[in-house]
Image (cartoon, rainbow, N blue to C red; front, side, top):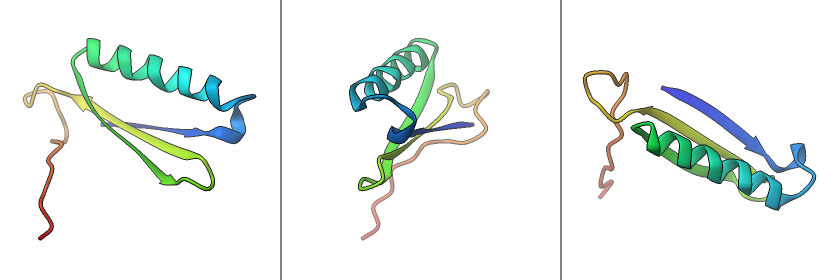
Length: 69
């Protein structure tokens, strides 16, 4: 599994950051990866993207949605 962090302060504009995020998501999904993307602290503009192979034989981790109730 790989993780990359996007910090809006590292970009000249928020639009530029979202272009990078969109491009990476497109590349990873075309290459057969599963991704998890979230914003940890919206006020700070820090976003996380985790990815791993969609094929369970190759993947180190499995993305599962759990019901916490």
